[in-house]
Length: 637
Image (cartoon, rainbow, N blue to C red; front, side, top):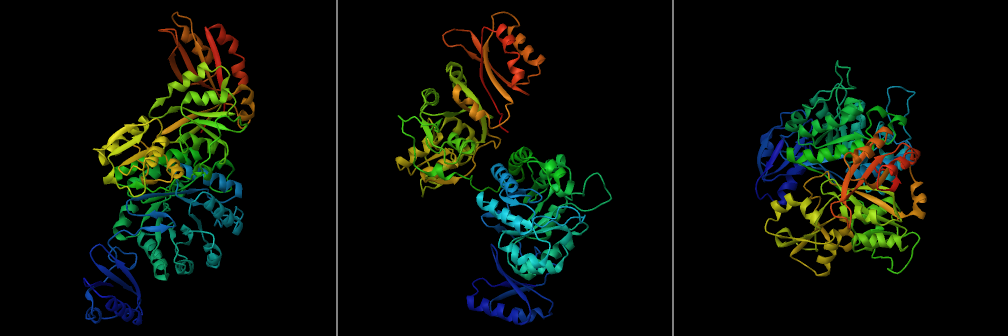
């Protein structure tokens, strides 16, 4: 039953009501709502409601009609928000849980954890104990797997969840994990539910293979009656007559359950479909149906996975799914739950290579410390890589050409802003500079302020022109009267408002810039389009190229050329590429400096083998006025 307390009830009256209910044999839960404070009293005992109504501080007593008392929305009108460490699940949030079906090794879980964390997952999953249909299938690494999972979670600042299959493992597992997972086969293992519930920890409860919604909610009731109110329901498909998919994903269960319970409900499209190509569309269907999140299996080598490889997404597929979820979230009135991007400790330090030094391991970039380019360096090289900030792009090329830096990292193309033509032109001019690598970075813009500045204080917003343009929708909706002031660099804008102690201004930049300069992120991820990526080139002098290239298979080439001034001359060159099986990925024309109305062409092409390119270079030179290979490298994924 629900005991609605009077407005202004005293602490003494409330404690007396709780004591009376407990003495009668009830489990009592206090729920503070927007308007009323209520006590939920559940148990097997029978009492006359009037004996409770007469107690001081009681406004009224309402019976709960549902068999699941604590889980019922009759007891609690507002949505429950489940906290798994720093991650919230429920309400207007969409939380994404990702990782491999099973923890197979320390190296495997560390690799995948890094990839799903970077793509946007906020909780890491991975099975240490695996209940399998066949006794001869891989059953998991047990405690060793738990240790690897915990290490990966700590390394990438992610809460971890894994399935528990036996009551005897509760004490062991709770020292390693942040959320228990009850699998479909154990949904009605009531002794297991009781033991897990006693821990008070968050629990992910999957729907049974053939369970009705009421049976599912009754399983949640077992957990809540035993001691935890942090329960997340997970629809993972039910068994029907249909054989086209592993199970039948019951998307309609999402809105039905949300009307019956205050607990958050998410979906597992991986187990529901069992087919990789169906996971992403079904994940989006779950979000469209109102789910508070999805749990997705991801593996970087699913063909070698020890369990459930056919339903595991490749990391690049998961990354695309995350972008689609971010695009869909505003349509359904929700926001994707996020954790701050992991910033290498070296980016927070106030170190800078001296201008006059020649360093064998220094990497140059354009911008101030904390720039997106520096973050690319930390991920492409080492987290403690020595860096050389440069004011202009040309300064990066000069630093590499003169030996002040062994490598340079320059942006070459943005998915929204397009090609950075200045760097194309500099590549064409600097004859001893070659492209040796490629990297990609998702550009996440944040509204950054000095500590204490509130939204209503902001009169000016500083950022690079592209940063302002990419956040135009946020600025027009939230800061329509603030002046938008272009700055030479996003990170430089953060540095500027800090050094001038500006309490009426904000900067738009990455979270690394906020971390480096010790400022606050007032609003995270304010870019209009979540599919905002920048592609970078790694450049070096020719003599340093081979060492970097040895890190991966060469599969891309960049070149520049000019053609004779006659009809079809460009077609001839492109036809050579086509006939020799070189798939062109990019084509740009650029004006030739000092030669009005004459143009050179920039081409990127795929390579199966470097020899494919070498064999046609003489033919390309025969049909061009000028020709140069800018670099061969490994394409970024």
